[in-house]
Image (cartoon, rainbow, N blue to C red; front, side, top):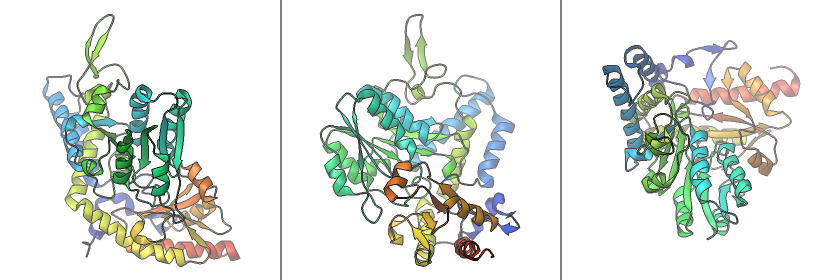
Amino acid sequence: MVSNFEKHRADFPILDQQVNDERLVYLDNAATAQRPNQVVNALVHFYQHDNANVHRGVHTLAERATTQYEAARAKVQAFINAPKTDEIVFTKGTTDSLNLIASTYGEANIQAGDEIVISIMEHHSNLIPWQQLALKKHATLKYIELTPTGELDLTDAKQKITPKTKIVSVTHASNVLGTVNPIKELAQLAHANGAVMIADGAQAAPHMPVDVQALDVDFYAFSGHKMMGPTGIGVLYGREALLQAMPPYQYGGEMIGFVHRDNSTWAELPWKFEAGTQNIAGAIGLGAAIDYLNAIGMAQVQAHEQQLVDYLLPKLIAMPGVTVYGPQDPQRHTGVIAFNIDGLHPHDAATALDMEGVAVRAGHHCAQPLMEALGVVATARASFYLYNTQADADQLLTSLQATKEFFKHGTV
């Protein structure tokens, strides 16, 4: 049995409130997670006691700030089992991390006639950088399609990934379908054809154990704010040899070795990619979030969310007039559940649910090509995290039924 996660809710005071005179049920975790007291307190402590710029000063506050900043990097390294801290680059988030790769590795290595392979389920952050790079370089962008059950078609992947492929970039877990993709198998296909493998971990790193060495990825990107850390902080893991060969992403302070009138040299990894004053407090807050997750255990977090999916998904699928997208088997579905109510725009559904205190997302979820493949303009989306409970799932079901009745009869 999974341990009782109800106790963790006390660490999230934002959850202890009413919205529209109803108990708040926060189910928009795929967009951003809430922060526990432990993360907020770490930020407050830094600003009240240790605030200074990192790496540049020899005074006590600067040394404290630098120690905490680099300690956060070490926590990230251990969290994803990266071989070295040099392979952990702090960024603004997943989007920034993926753009960094496209603007450096992609610019240097993609030539006319090359192929880049992604999946049709990608978030725009893992689609547009490759689309624009392919257009600029006269390369070809290929999409791995879906199976009828809403999962990545591995047979199609084997056809799309060829010796012409130079980059394969696929989400580890879909932000719409709740699908977990076979990243290790894709990495094997990519490497067998001489390509690098990139994984968008924005919806995976907060919810399941991640081991970049076991996955055999060349790059892995994720965001702090989706795993209870601050906004504006993210991570790019990259193999040391690849990062060494890549040009800097931005220029200026902090990333230089020596600057002369006519030329410059760059700092060692990972600071070569961290130009300017970084989000120091954000990194320290991310470290506190990792501490919080480690104290629970990522396997336990995943198991708790799976219990909720096992409970909710069959009931949601069985609800008349509701369409659920993605795998219908709970064991093949994460806590991200996209759905539509027949005859009701998802924005109207989300507004009605909000009146019941239930916060869900509605829209195309930055995945418009996937929406087109699904034959819809948008969906509603409920997404769960470690502080959600069965009571939250029950309230979603009750509120959905009330919403259906209201729009059918005009009364709740």
